[in-house]
Length: 296
Image: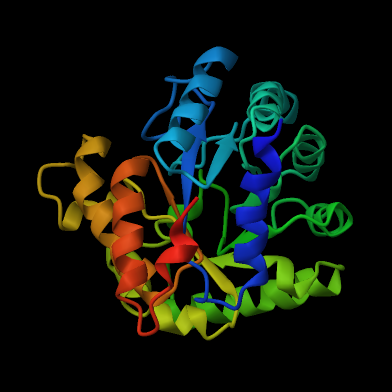
């Protein structure tokens, strides 16, 4: 249990810092689902999931993001009871082992139970739109909260990729979400935004968001970027359409690029490659993050 406060303090220091002033954190993905697009079915047992979560930390992850509901394009929703049964034992064991755990959920009841089990951050891909109780729940919990840009559930999100200007529209919609969440009681300094690469966005639109990420930073919030193994990367990774792992080179390149722009964190499957890329990106910022702050 002695390691847990140290792991949580890394997150707290990053959240407390001004946007871009802390090194880019690396969030390792742990899907305890049978149908996630990249690693579904690999970590269905508690033992396998916990072992992988601990491996992610040994490889350099600052956070482990535990999710029990697939959000791959076309996925149907997982029943709430099943989602809780998948994630809570894993969250509890990882937290007890000193891991800073993020819970990846769109449900307030799952978020509350996961925080009770030891999670220190709530990562909601719907930005509070999927569950009207989420904002008030997280406000009461007091944890940092990631609000992603979102327009519809996975089964229908491809129908919602029309934008006048994808970056301007995403920024405007995220700004509305931030205002709504603060009005529900969330502390502004605990809010992190995510532009939602691949969610109701074509490949070209996702690349526009990466290219013009400074416009997302204009929201003056910490920004998390989740590009890992997503299909838009296939435009620069020929032949990788069916092989998610083959997209890692492109993922690593995006990690370096967004870290250099001041990203708060990247959410990735291959932690070692992105740890190195994030440190390179940190050093390429206009005002590089000091090497002393990069030590775990």
